[in-house]
Length: 223
Image (cartoon, rainbow, N blue to C red; front, side):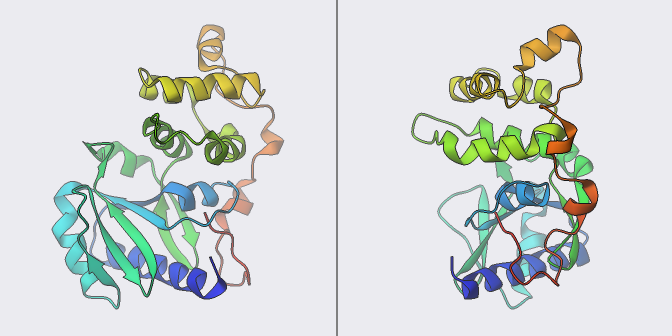
């Protein structure tokens, strides 16, 4: 991603966040950018926002009233908003299911590229990334850095409960244990200990995370 595309994407995120907030639509920044806000490494992905399915039409109208180009893809679980070639996905179904209300309630407010917006909680981020793992989509090399960075902020027992029955996600939990990123959730559950990684000092400090994407950064981190 070159600097021009990156700038267009950041501007698209600002527009989406401001428009959804002004329209009074519950939403949250999700995916790789949400992980980045919580301290994950930068990546070159497009941006994702989640909304309620019943707000799809209202959100579409709110974004269509901005300078963004709004389009319907073939998929029936999202629509897309473009700033030039920079893409923001507006998602209203996750893995075939309606986005739960509790996910919006758990979201935390951060300043993202100068615009205050709710950001998906770390436990939700990891759970959703792991729930979609399949035989055709099972790249642990992308997921591992996110898990390392967010491990202190994640309730791993909750993650294990949510991904139960997905063999690829369950295998990833065993990998995290083997690599000593975090103890396996079964161990944490049996011990009755708080789910956490190796040390709190390894996680990004709250004050550092809250300023990610601040306008004064000349090369803001993205995910």
